[in-house]
Length: 213
Image (cartoon, one colour):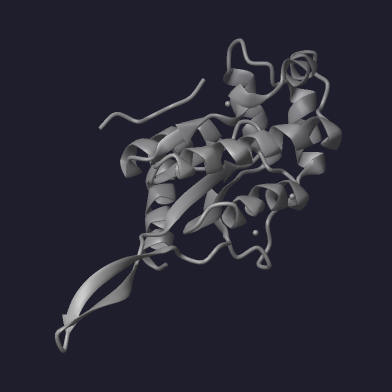
């Protein structure tokens, strides 16, 4: 099946559905666990490969893909195109929009979704985590694509016609609050390898996480 895509302040218990069994001549309703649905947020600074990894995951897992940048309001796009870093105030509505879109898709029947969003600060991730309380049987998980500023500067400079500039990459690292062990819903992936290596490593870690829940 083709990957589904869009051009867009933490977890809930697993939902159950009844199943009827016969016991001593009577019908009894026994709850059966429903498979946990995931919202995977692919995070990290500019140049880390969020979109590439997210598209690969969505296709491999047959999940909906939501490109976070597509949901920025025009004022944010204009600021980034001018090399002006976004402020917290610029991001709140965007983060809520992404969260609401993911919940809307799951409530509409999607098995899960892969969302790209830099989520540089913990409070940004906390905004997304609320989605786990807004839909039954939903788990919000993050993939943090980790790399050095030097590596990402090289990658961004190699891109053509992209609004992200050197100063903006530096500003993202200045704002970055890397997830630590207290955020146990985050999967860390080193992106210093090739694109294929990073994609396969991420898929392996995501599948392991899903299989263990």
